[in-house]
Image (cartoon, rainbow, N blue to C red):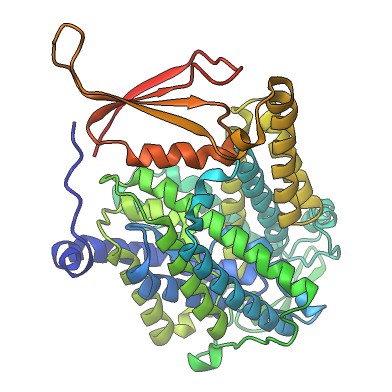
Length: 517
């Protein structure tokens, strides 16, 4: 069955699909609003930083991106990197750390632009899955650990992640009842939302419901005024510090970078980390969203890198968080009927209008509710990746576990590098060393292309068949060779991938399918 005709792009696409894209953009704006603020706060940045990312990622970068229905904005996957950068570069001064981090984001954006022109979009296909699963699980664990204390209204004493994990029971014992109540109610709404049967209720995003309910509770409990209260003769304090703070003057909310320590060792390391993680996570998301796209359009990965680089350069100069293509908002965009990139554009415009017209409403949002949203996000990031890793073999699960451990114990970039090195080492020990495969086969896979013109031995007509025969070695680091041939395969013809004649390693496996438009 052939795929439906893809909608037109640019101005023609806007004329054809503005109604569906406008509706989807509005719904995505409702989802993105609390997430942009929550991700910024969890990153140690001002709330305005997250909103600026959603605005620039939608209203500006959507026009030049290489993808069609992805939603750009701040993502949970970058919380760990930005928070760590602010801490490290600021040396205990969060304001200075944020400005130094903005300078790193500017440089990371410039590097991404260069990577796009150098056609580094291939990064999406050469990173081992087990390392990616480990990275995402670790990010989920870190987010959950840090936000549970906020949701309970407790400030942990430990500075290390493992120390904060150990403090979770203590936070439960010393929780602030009114703050924790908002956090628990928010989590209950988010977890229970999928079980609601009403189609009318399901049209409203769960994070928005959680935030609105939390605002009403905070109003009832008078969070806007600093005061103390007693529960079982124990005194607790609540007040405006438990709510979001947004500058009412848009220009006053802008923060500018400080390039004073740009070339220090610590700053260079942060630049590399932001560039690597933002690029890889964004490209992987675009690949995943392309598979969800009902029109099966194929995004231009190199153009996507250039667009994200331009966006991050702009955001670094005005005080925003780095953007990536975000998978949850992108899948929701597709589910709500988006056809073109204009839905992303509209979501950014709605964020801008809300920030300009209703900043006071944002200041009524309790931090505990945003922390609850991020806790659920962290859980949903960590657990599914664990399940995926458990299905791909014992050796790959070992690599996943190594990556997860070192990211939590040390640093995200360190964990990813160790995971890749361990993966390469296992390939060397298990395949290259015993089988005598050359280093060239390891870096660049050998693919032979054979084409059958469609005529059998007896003259009977049959469908034209293209066979890709792999020789030598097929691993993550040389997958780009096969991918290039797959992308070039003729449409609506039978494509056969033959893995049965690998050099000294016989799999006896052959895959046969028809590539559709």
